[in-house]
Image (cartoon, rainbow, N blue to C red; front, side):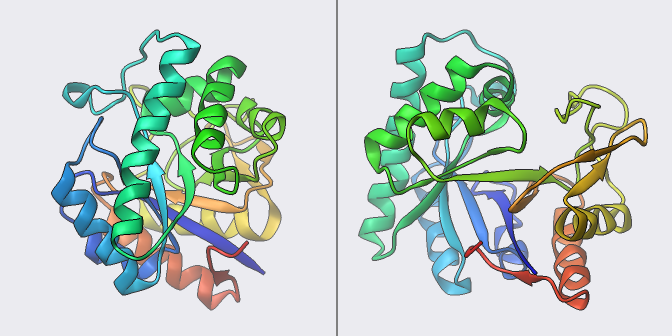
Length: 246
């Protein structure tokens, strides 16, 4: 068995290098919701050092709210937003003699796309415009997969070890109690269950199917370093290979 572990990095949290040995893919903030030229370049160098696949992590241009406030942009505005941010990371990767592998939207843009096919398709069109071989990473069982298929993009379904789900397979909003899971022991067990059984329990303890190829660890979670290490060790101990090649 094998699975990818991805983490949102380059967001100025300061824990990137501590997390990097325990993941296989890094989603790098493109300077819109977080990050700048220095953090992007530094994070790319870390991916090279630790042999981690590079992904662009485009979000709304809203640093004040860390890209986690819903915005109402037109389809073409979202396409342009995504294209611009992917291009930033893509050019930096080329300059560093490496390459971009995937794209994963951030925060509110991601959550809106999971529920709105037009937003999901706008992201897909932005990815396709830059490179049709880039992988579209998105929430399992959401509109993102349909959008990827409509643009003939490879889709990598994502699940979250440190976030709670509702019965429809959508993430519980962060403002609600229990939305973010802080206990690393719980996170590692959830990760293993996703990898082995393609399922997870909702916030109401109902079992739902999640056929995910990648598991996300949030770099801004206070327990991010501990989560990443414990999940990596626990999955490895249970014969799950951590790799971006899934």
